[in-house]
Amino acid sequence: MIETHDKGLARLLGIGTGRAAGGWRGSYGEGEQHESAGGRPGRPGCGEPEAVRVMTPRTGRMARICGIVTAGFAVLYGCALGLLAIGTFGLFGAERDPLSGVFLVPLGLPWNLFLENTPDALRPWLAAAAPLLNLLIIWLACRGLGRRAPT
Image (cartoon, rainbow, N blue to C red; front, side, top):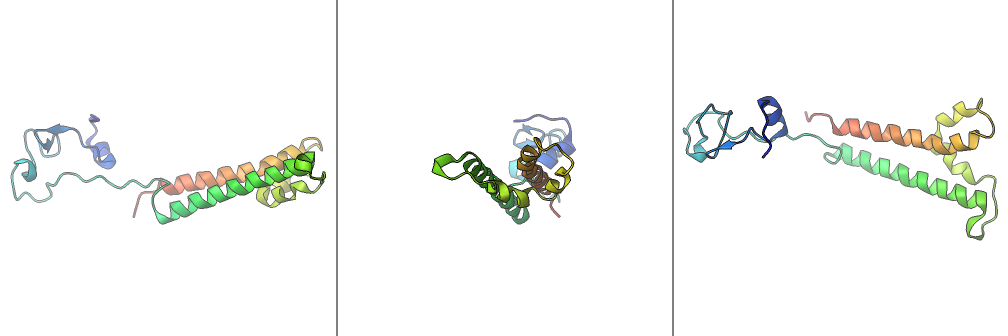
């Protein structure tokens, strides 16, 4: 059992402040119990505090869709990087293709548009890493969506 002295935080997290003789210590006063634990019956609003549903990225329809979109984007990014490696280095007997990184361009937009003034040697590496910034933004948006309190 987790002990805490902050009753508001304990109720928000749904962990209570500990049990004393079957009742919630601190919820009804010292020594008081809920009627289900032999306390005073008929007292309105004296039920044991229910856990408040805290939204996490894995709950709710929007958060689930957001997680699927994030995973889908990550898979597309991995596939595009794989095709870039296969085409650039001629892996698995494939011919070397200078356009093998074309699938990274739409995944990295709009950040690819800002790479015009970078050195030529650095530009391919930055273009390959640009979709990571989009993936980070999507992930942070999903994380923020999951932390919203239910309405």
